[in-house]
Image (cartoon, rainbow, N blue to C red; front, side):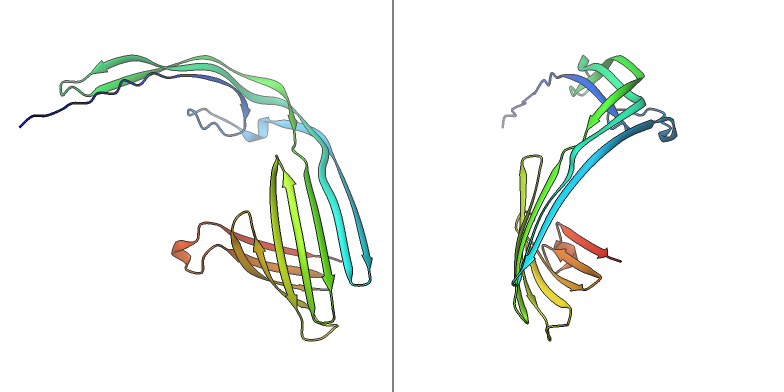
Length: 200
C-alpha cells in the first residue's frame, strides 16, 4: 500500500486600480454620504404608428457621464507573500497588500443602451419582436398578444431569448405589468423578471 502526495504551490500577483462605493477586496470604513457627484445624460427616441404597425427606436444614456468628487480609490499590489507549512505539512499563505487608499476625482462613463421594438396588431392578435443592446450584448425578445375585444387590454405571452425566460404580460391603455421566469418550480428558478409601468 502506498500513498501519493500532490502539493500545489500557488503564486499570485494582483494589481488593483479602481474606484468604488463598496469594497469587495478588504474591509474598509466607508461613508456613502461622503461621495458627491454631478453629471448628465442624453436620451433620444422616435416612434411610428400606422396601419397596425407600432415601431419604436430609443437610446438611453447616449451621452452620459458622472464626475465624482471624493471618490474612494485604491491603487495596490497584492501577492501571496510568505509561504509556510504547519506541523501536519499543509501549506499556508500570508497575503501581502501594499499600496495607497485615498479620495480622488473620478470620471465615470455610463454605457449607452439602444432598444428597438416592432409590433403589428390586428383586432385580437398582435406579434412583437424587440431587442436591447448594451455593452456589446444583444437581448432579444418576442411576444404573442391576444385580447377579447378590439378595445380591450392585451394579454401577452413573452419570451426573453438571452435569459431563456418565459412569462405573461398584461398591457392596457395606461400601463403594463409582466412576470417572467426560466422555470415554473420556485426551487429551480435561475433567473426571473418583474416589470411594471404606468403612464399618465
